[in-house]
Length: 149
Image (cartoon, rainbow, N blue to C red; front, side, top):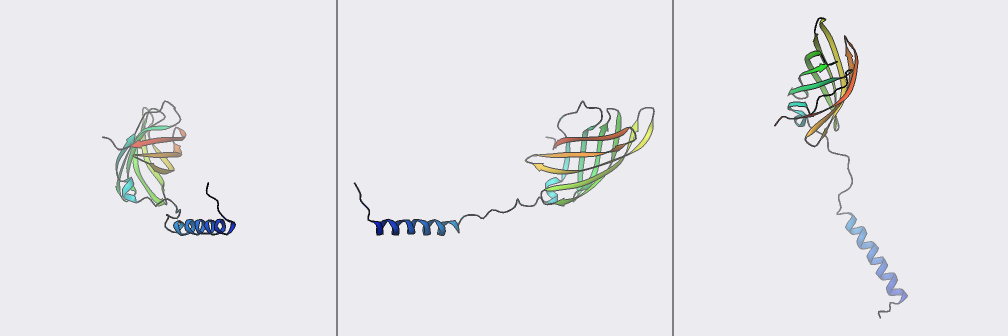
């Protein structure tokens, strides 16, 4: 069996500790997540699935054309066909956005629609929580958008 004297043990521990400290400087230091660029949000996006909740908007189509601005369309309250423009600003990994548009409801004519939220990229999709107003009442929800294949 290997016997170590007290001085040898102290020297061994000191070397082990100093060696791990030296190795620590080669490790990547933790940093905040890298900022998402506007190009990551670019292109055409569409809702993954239609919602059956009536006080919401669904079937979103987003076309981000310039930076983080573009056009959108959706169906709110199950019958209100909406389209308009949207614009946003990047804040780290989030896109804070606002959208305005006009809805066309059967037998009700046109009405203004305003939505806002904060979208985040999650791999190949965008999570879009939103809230807003329509002439049929308030709306709120979360849509998952993906680029069509």
